[in-house]
Image 1 (cartoon, rainbow, N blue to C red):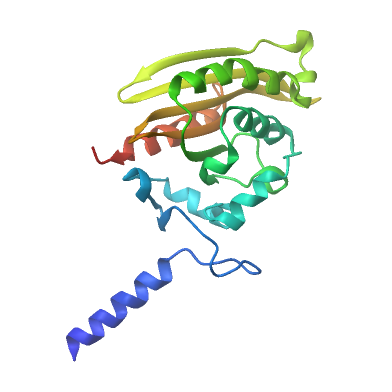
Image 2 (image 1 turned 45 degrees about the vertical axis):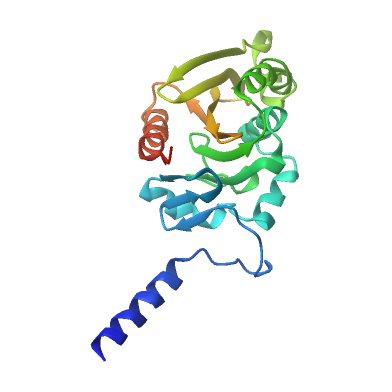
Length: 231
């Protein structure tokens, strides 16, 4: 009897932490990601990572299934995200996006400018092609953004590539200005092979010397440090 009770409680607990469908969503909304509280598993890539606990405060904004991800097809209009979105979409097909999460909402659901927005992709795009797309299409998307239009002299857009362990890291950075405030926006593309495909983790964030910007960088590094992939 005791054993059966333990099993029942354990089963109930596992059910409670499974990612639920949101009101109005089809129960069968397809997801290619397994979520257990702060732990994310990408079975196709045999990869996993853990997010900072504080990100769970914004889990209602997470997009981890087909219905939620489809909302990204609508162009973002909210300041920073209205630039981040087109830049990322110019480089990687949105159809290859597995998840979109962050420590704040996205677009109209966002409250602060110093948040981190993250996506994961499993794509046929090779690292060399990603680099070329970022330097051309990604740069063009940044130049066309409203935030860039507010920067005197149109600002300077920089792209760079470096290796960090098994990752190839492409970054595009540019200044954005919104009338009375602005900052240095950055989009990082961390890519590595996953069988015949490429796994890409994308981080959209402001970099700088402010405590909020430094916290954002710590969150990115914590996620990357937690990342594991079977060889």
